[in-house]
Image 1 (cartoon, rainbow, N blue to C red):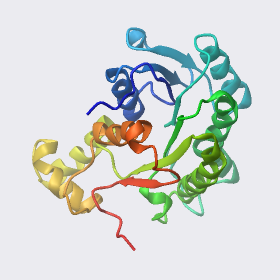
Image 2: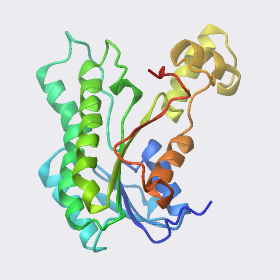
Image 3: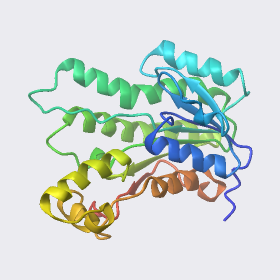
Image 4: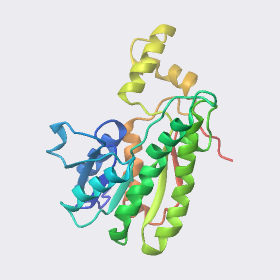
Length: 256
């Protein structure tokens, strides 16, 4: 399927590693002109596939820095993927007020900063795709500050969709559950070894899923599966999908 993303100008935040990197590389494979973003510095591995921009988008100065670097190389961004984010540990008793503020800067206000800077010149047909979590509507007792920040991102997405809709720009949220990143694989494979579930992740995945992320498909999403949903929402094929929270969770969240 041709997603018609060739020559689209795309900024993917937090794309120097992890799921963000896979999303950005998927856009490159579709022929888009991609701006990879890191909060501080890059390895040279990205120079052959796209532009590299740096800036701490939890601050106004850092967001301005990203804007200046992008504007030095292009006149616009067609697709903004707000992938940058972080799950920080803590409980209702242990998380300090500084922890709450910090996680909102990371997961919520960083998005606001980039929206304010890049949407004024975003053309009709533009796309904004935010990366959330199934926990925004199904939070755990642990990490309440993280889930609250992602919940705010979910409501922000709906409000922004109403704001941008008349301009012909769609805004959607992609909410994965557990993703099979190298860090997740290493953590749960260690637990699988201790439980005697198998020597490889593939051998143990069904039991890992049942114990830590139960869902009807009995496995954990790959980063590419998350990227595929992002690219679909960025394409013309999804031109009438707007203000939605698309869960990539294998059916782990019951439909009400």
